[in-house]
Image (cartoon, rainbow, N blue to C red; front, side):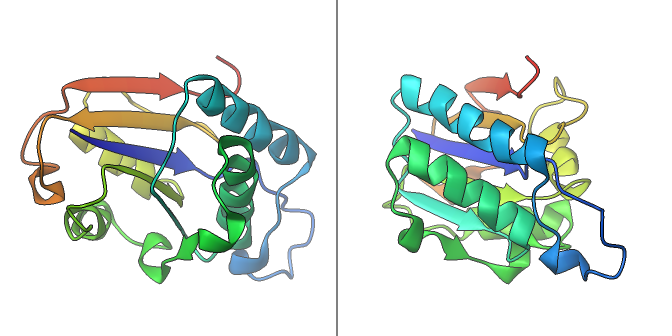
Length: 161
């Protein structure tokens, strides 16, 4: 069984229009929502083996806040440039290339790309609000099957749920 978590970054600030997009921080709501979602995952004993994050500050901060709640070392988070401004096909290629020894992986990124990928994997989910988490369980031994097989189970959670 392979478990994939796609996590959209928490609410970010747009207060400084001169700030480059990569450097936009979380706003106050985002700083509250990310740990809250992490605690929800921790209550379910979610133990990821790998966290991959976009290099954007808002995504990386979301990953760090959730990592802290689920007991994952913040220093072990892997920043992957391919998770920033990539389309659903590129994101799927990242997932399919994951080491088959890994069974539980979290990706932190952005819309509209994450919503596009989520909808492609499960037509049940139309939109991912900020800090939404979609958990896909695939009955397979290889990440290369993701997207070729339908998920055995889908769990969708978001801060206002």
